[in-house]
Length: 321
Image (tube, rainbow, N blue to C red; front, side, top):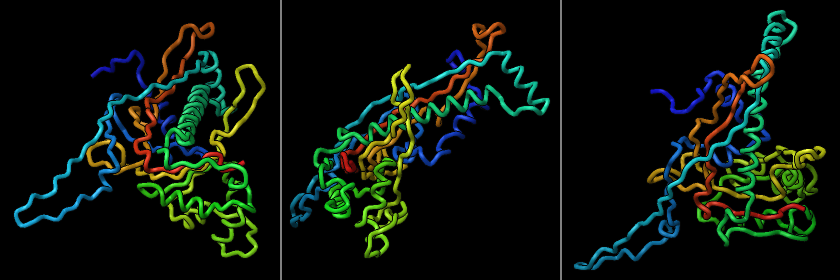
């Protein structure tokens, strides 16, 4: 069946785009809100968590009626959003680069370079969207978030109590979190906290630094994710101003990569509906590029980042100074 779209997807360039995902440990979006393959239009079910934790009296008299329970759910119809970027390479550049590669004087392919560069933008844009959603107080149940300030911030090594505060957050969630999410700046502070070092290392001095694996073991979670990517925060035309994508907060999340969509789906804090299989790339001739025309490369994805169960996460806002 022919595609209804005017441009055909290029499988070779798409392989570059999909293969480029999660190459850098700095990028954590696909682990924090895992991708689930969907159609462009899809539906997911928002379950009332209270029903799963409420147990009516089940005692039945000899001729009495059995307690009747009704399970409700809220169907949510949703759709993915399109994100795309493109670049054009003049035909003359493509020919010159091909001749240089044939002569052995270069390995540069401007079409591949454009594709991977656009892929960089795609994954960073997704990282920004996921960070904004996960590190937003609005994504959490009102009873499952806490704003830290002054001496309660974990950057105060003398007065703060990160172990007690975090354990209280873990216990408060309806489904216990299995993931901790830090920004790089916050993680650099947290891993040197004397109380954390002492607990992980049985060290009396509290000096040193702990690893992600040690912190995961201490709090009995499956993973500690640290977002270390940067983005240019300057407006167009202004000098470069690199800022961290993930801020000075801490999120505790229960993430189930198979959860979120379908009847009987296990609860998960959130997921990403993906109708593009991780991303696509296409190319087409563009007569308006240079004297001899050129090749335009377009990279994009169809996704929707969703918080599906606010009771499966706890948020510490401004956890670090």
